[in-house]
Image (cartoon, rainbow, N blue to C red; front, side):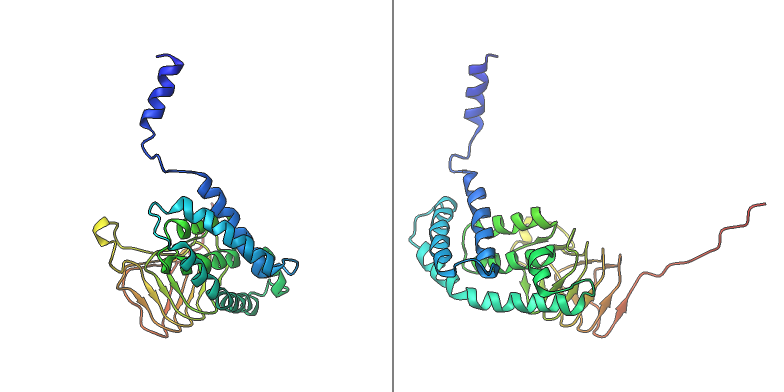
Length: 262
């Protein structure tokens, strides 16, 4: 097969003519600029908002296969939500600072904590998800995933004062519900009991009530699984049934002395 024939075969097999990978790169740029606009003291908010709108129009144009004129309405609605999003993120940062003895300042959390960055991008993408924005929310969440190791689906519902510590390896599924003052450590999974395309419009992921702490590598599965308020879930547990409020769940272990050598 000649080079020309190989090239022609590749071209003929590229069967997604509207797939444009510049959308991915432009969405990542938009995401970072949005983060800096809200938190960087040196950023000019009014100027940045103008640039963000221009960038959003471009990524929306690339993401939306139907030109229905909804871009302006979505942007205006999202822009109106930004003050509330910022208020909620400030609560998240304060929650982290209040509960992490390693945190020396709130500024350190904004600058250096991957968990906070993951929460911030989740809160941006979630609002766009609620507005039925095509593809962009998922690209934003996957960008945060690539930078932090944290996979939060933009469809998840997360309340106020969320503390995500270390962040690496945490997975929060699309229909998860997390209420207020919840603390989650690295490697936690809030997932589905089974993967079936027919379950797309059903609740597949757990509900976590107020004031719950979930320690590292715990796995909690199922749409009917509810972790009651004030619970502490220990590390490495596997949960597929609801846990009543004020409970402690942990793995037991056995310690034995090694036999003495003769």
